[in-house]
Each structure stands twice: as C-alpha cells, then as structure tokens.
Image (cartoon, rainbow, N blue to C red):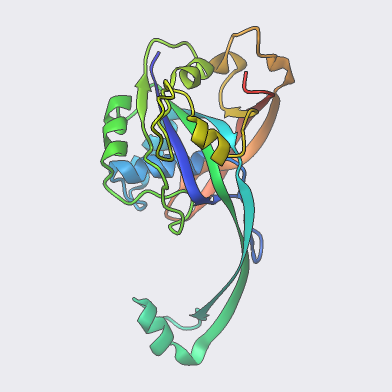
Length: 261
C-alpha cells in the first residue's frame, strides 16, 4: 500500500480546538481539518466548493507522528471591528475603520500557539479518493494557494518534503520509511534521519506521539509496539462545511512510545 508522508514545521503553529468565548486554544498536534484544509489549499479547492471539500475529507485517512510539541505560547489579542447592526456590508478593512467608525468596538481574545513543533503526517487514499497520492505530492511541492499551519499568521518554516512511500503495510512502516531532510542548514549527511543540529534545536525529542484513525492494524502489527496501551477518543475535527465552519466528531487512536522506538 502507498502512503503520502510529509512534515509540518513552523516557528508558530496553531491547531484549533473547540473555541468558547474569548479563548482560542491549540492542540499539540495537527487536526484532520487542518490537514485536509492544507491539502485543499495545495490543490486549489476553494472553501465555498462544498462538494469538492466533502470528497476530499471523505477520500483520505490520516495519521500523525509528533516529534516535538514545541513550546506553548499565549497571545493577548485585541482588535477593533464595527458591530453587525444593520444590513451594511463592509468590503474592506478600511471600510470598517472609516465608514463604521461610530460602531467600532474592541474585541478581546486569548490565542494559543505552538512554537517550534515538528510532526509528520501520513495520508492514505480510500476508495473514491478524488486525487492520487502522487498528484497531491506534486501540488504540495507547487501549491495553488498559500499554505499555513492552522492560521494565516503561521506560515511554513521549512519545506513540506512530501514523499510517496510504497510497499508498506501500515502507518508505522510509512513513518519509518520516510527520508528526513535537514530543517536547519547542515553539512553532515543524516542518512534520512533527523539531523544532529535539528535534534538539538528541537530539544532532543526521543519520545513519539502517534495519532491515527481506523483500526489498530491500520497503524501497526509490530509486536514491539504494545497497542493495548493505546487510547481511543473522540475529536471534533471532521469537516462538515468549510464555508459555515462546522465540524463533526470522529474516532481517533493515540499511542505514546517512549524513547522513539
């Protein structure tokens, strides 16, 4: 079976959780909605194209290997915007500040980010997938729209380095077969592993966190990994409508592996 594996690294990333009130939290790893959104942007699929968005999120399963969760950063955020009273549509930010000056109010929020976090994403094509993994790989190398890590203020800090990994049986083997390239400049050949300089920069990440959807066998059948220790939980990150910003719950498994086995 083939898998598409690519990395996500940024000086800042924000993997949105359920937002209540003024608090905007981030998870420690990318959600499925963020991953599918990134693929959609690379392929040039617009948010308002509901049919194409549904085909995309239903056509692929994903898994995540977290090398480093990075450092949690909180930002006290303020912005001014006019209220929504009346039927006038503000077309630009200038319209909001000039035409809506008498209605301006201050919105306060607390936003979270992850600084210097690194994760690998493995994508598996399901029956009816609208694009082949090779097509997606090519679009990740040359995306149609700007790619970012959860928020537009969080651009990529390193190339995605996408690779279609073939002849592997599960997510774990796909992660193991991935050929890493240095994030920071390095003169030493790391032979497909994380370079020594990157390893130090990321804080010596020896532990691994794995998240995937499907069955235990979809992740691994390796007896070294004790899959009876996995947790199964529900996460509300299955996109229902990009335009209305609606999500549904999905089942996800989590496994912690100490020492990067």
